[in-house]
Length: 285
Ligand code: AMP
Ligand code: ZN
Ligand code: FE
Ligand code: FE
Image (cartoon, rainbow, N blue to C red; front, top):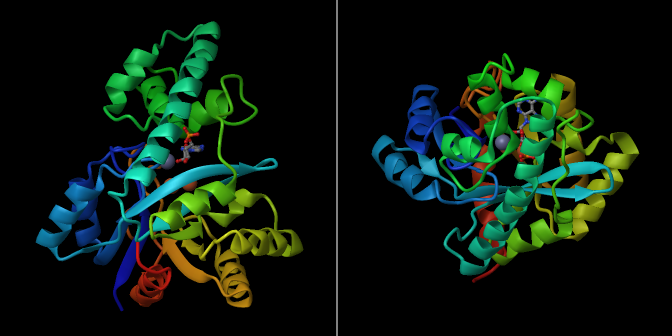
């Protein structure tokens, strides 16, 4: 049974490896289909398609959009999107703008804590327009203000820490709507982030489904067997598609590998056809 990986980040957002490098690792891990799901940007897809054709890896055009409802930050994955859709590209550019409004405020907080960092340094290090906190974490590591990305988040960047600044985020219904408008299937990423379980999660997912959500990321690097079973059960009950991926980022999540996560991730290839069929079922452009 071959494996797939539907959640991967590259240098086009806050991952530390290029699409080509990610695909080479995927190939080694026996991954036969994958999705590059960079935050708020689709510019890594052409390279993935080219290298995928060479290596015999099927590429599902993807993206990850952060949203907020109440106190929960929900990440919505978009699959089988028409990635060249001009409306989608405009929406994503607007989301990146909200990053550029927030990030300098984070830098100001860090400077006021006595850390000598500038946003120019972050931009240079990132080399992309989709700049996230992991890039700031990497600068803090390079400058020896933090020993790891986890250390940088724990000390400065995570919610509740002194350099945390909230970003303006869309509501999930908007993120789902933009993905659907580009012909894609919207999937709730890493559902543990919802901070609800049991009946609370059931009702959240029912609401999201009514707003157009098509699936849930059941298989994920950090899920316990129990969590995977519970999410699988929920997907069945709510008639949502099942997806999965590693959420590979490279050096800011050093324990997570392409295709295998922390070693025991295996996303079965049979999940792919229902996903593609759902995208086709959404109808012509
Ligand atoms: P941002 O999109 O700029 O708000 O940054 C959030 C991203 O940072 C998430 O999507 C994760 O990829 C990453 N992240 C969050 N917490 C941590 C952590 N403790 N260590 C490493 N990366 C993290
Ligand atoms: Zn990320
Ligand atoms: Fe995410
Ligand atoms: Fe992600």
